Amino acid sequence: MVLRVLRWIGLAFLAGLMLLVASSCTMLGLNYASLDTANKPAAMPALDIQRLMTSDGRAEAMKLLEDTLYGPWPAGLPVAISDWRMINPDYLEGRGTLEELDITIGNGDGARTFQLVAAFPGGAHSLPLVLSQTFSSNCATFPGEAVTSEDGDPCTVRDFGMVGSFIVKSLFGEYIAEAPVDRYFDEGFVYASFHAGDFIPDSAQRAPAALASLGGEINPTSTLMAWAYAFSAAMDVLEADTRVDTRHTSIMGHSRHGKAALLAAIWDTRIEAVIAHQSGFGGSSLSRSTTGETLSRMQRTYPHWLAPDAAKYTARPELLPYDQHLVLALVAPRRLFLGNARRDVWSDPNSSFRAAEAASAAWEASGVQGLNAGGMKEFDPTDGIVWWMRPGGHSIVEEDIDAFLRFLKARTGNGNP
Image 1 (cartoon, rainbow, N blue to C red):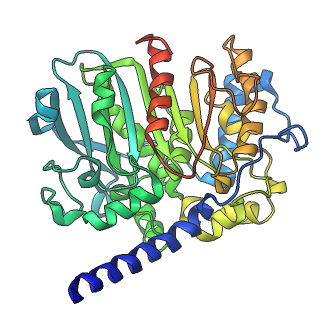
Image 2 (image 1 turned 180 degrees about the vertical axis):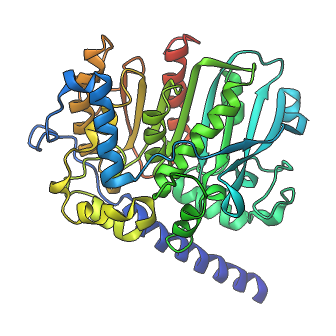
Image 3 (image 1 turned 90 degrees about the vertical axis):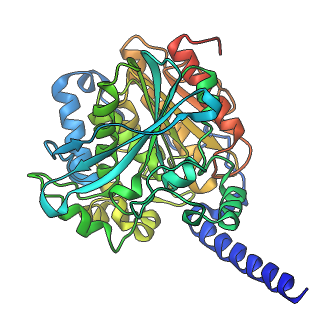
């Protein structure tokens, strides 16, 4: 009896600790995001769409991103790829295979290696792709499978605790760690993912040294740009695989990895569609907004996400020569899904919607339907820039997966929305 009480005291302490950590990065969704955009300032400055549609205008805009918040795209940073290793030839009770390979980015002693894990439906040939960047280790994304753990050995139950997993899922949703691969298989998709922290650690103390040591002629100076480059490196692998339809390649990221997904799509135009779920500041939310986390607080809490020179802009975002509607517009005319939740005030859905409104003209200038004009409650998965809002907080839940798939299916013609 005493041991049981002590166990529950320990669990309660762990839950409280996790709750405290969560509150520092999500504000726990204790309020509701406003649905009223009419009384809020429009995204500024206005986009010069005609200029942006030219190659020179696009290059100028990308240089602005590099010179302010994100640092350079590490063009030419070497990428080395191993052969596929079979992890499970009868994955999901024989529905497909689970395979992994090593991706090494960089030169010399500073080069860093991470594992890309892919689930291929049985008999796959030229199927649409979903490529995701994950918060959790590959062990948690593919539970019970002998993929490579962070220590280099096959995963065991010791690599992720049941109690910790339960608490994280309770706070951040059922799919914050484990991937619903069966759902993607049901709809005929190849699913692949990697743990971004295995490449560049999500640590203000360790990330700068890891970035500086990569050994390229141009090194990234922010983890967001490095993680974006990792998306592109994974695309090198998957685009060369005949089991993947290179016409229908989508990338997906939640929160900080949604920010990285937006950057990856800007610099790698092979990516045909983007799901940036609750990407917040530095992602789809306006830098000049004073609601929610704000850019300045994000930079203070996670300084490694942005380039060192970004501090002068995060302190005074009015000095930025652009706002995040430019980031969104640079994805056009490819399809973009912006996921949001009503209680996720930390990510500031209201300013994200206003950014989407301002960016919509970039799709329309390309002859593609932009944002649905029905407001923040409207969801049309066939639009060029798709807005999704559900109840709840900063998490990945079943409703989100349903919406992701409706968006992806509408794009591929693989069923009706």
